[in-house]
Image (cartoon, rainbow, N blue to C red; front, side):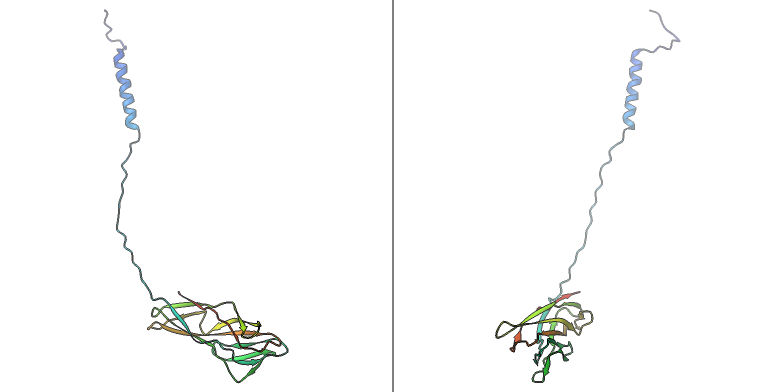
Length: 183
């Protein structure tokens, strides 16, 4: 057996030890997983209930008494209760008619919006003749109002009633829905 002093040869087991250290160090360089962090907190919630809007018509929209002519026309009732006629219609003073008054109640000092129909058909009590009610108006600005500090409010509605030439003589009636909602 000869000794190899000063030789650069290393025994086999030494090379395996170096490889083991290198492969172990590559594991150290691998990314490590972090534990997830969770948190919780308290959330507050609240609700405010308001009174439901209550609506009633205290005065009907009444176009009064008038006579049809040989040409078509209309009867206009303003929201202020002023009646005028156009075309072949002649107003008769027997009944002046009136604008409709709508009364409402709800949550004090709240604002509301009004939605009116586009048109309504009035039907004769005798026969099947009709007239069209449209062009609704109110005394509210931009169809909005405010309930007073007691939760009470009111507004008026007017409209235009179309009258055909030689409209059949009868009493005409119909109804329409006014929708109110809080703003």
